[in-house]
Each structure stands twice: as structure tokens, then as C-alpha cells.
Image: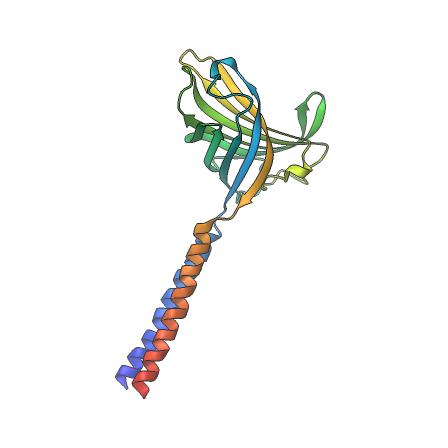
Length: 222
């Protein structure tokens, strides 16, 4: 009887532990980090960065940020990753100042008034002719109204925009600034594989331990 009781307890405790692990994994999976990938092209290159980067360079990249802060319009410190590939050149996220900002009814340039979703982050990468990258920013604009409010939200789809612009800004030892600038041709949300794997691992553990405990209990009873 004691063995049966022990196995019965084990049959409940181990699945309970697995369930706790599963719930913890799901909580982690529901963390507020979201990732987007993008492609695009180059529209402007300052001469100092030629010929390493040119107008024919293909553009691709990704960025990641925490979309949990709810209100305020400006959300500093939420960007956690960024990669920008321009032809054979790569710039990446660097610790430092970063933010996502939601604007309503601002001057978009050229006399246009509208809304903007903006991401900016410190950046790093190899120097080009003495100029090193230090900042990446992304503007997603729409003339007129795009957002109901300035609460934190994911970037809008390109189909809803009237303009997009990304910039990678470089600086040399004298403080002179140059940049590469372009626009986006695609912007896609990327699922987080780690979250799926954590959920699956927790579910398998729960089912396996529960079934194993039940088999052991039946074997002892027989």
C-alpha cells in the first residue's frame, strides 16, 4: 500500500512539476519581445562610403523590441536587437540609447501632416574610410491619420503607409556625419521559435510524466 501511495504521489507530483514548467515556459513565450524582418533598397549614399556601399546594394535586416509598454508615445530602452545588411556590409545593434516612438499629427516633411512609427537605436559595425556607424533609425509614415492614439503598438503594414525611410548614420573622429539612406519593400513579423520550443518541451514533459506515473501505478497494483 505504501508503494502504491508513493507511486500515486509521484504520479501527481511529477506532472504537477511539469505543468508548472509548462506554465512558466508559456509565460516566457508570451514575453513582450516581437521581431520583424525587412528588405529594401538604397536611395542615397554619401561619397565617403563609396564604393563599399552603393545604390545597387540589396538591403535586408531585422529588429526586435518590447511592445508591452502601453501609453506615453515615447518608449525609450525597448529595442533589444537590430541587424542591417547592405550588400556585403553589416551593421548591428549596440547597447546605448534606443526607443520606439509613436507620433500623431506631426510634420512629415514637404508640408505633409500625418502619423509616424519610429524606431531608433545605437548601432555598430566596421569603419568605412574612417567613418563608423553609430545610429540606425526607421520611419514609417502616413499622411493623414494612421493611429487611433500614441499607445505602444507594432509597426503598421507597408500597404497602409505613404512613405518609409531607414537611415544608417556614420561619424568620423572629427565628428563629421555621413549616412546611407533608403526605403523598405517588405516588413514581416517573425515568430519566436524559442517560445514554440519551450511550449512543446513543457507539453511533452507533462504528457510523458503523467503517462509514466500512471503505468507504474497500474503495474504495481497488478
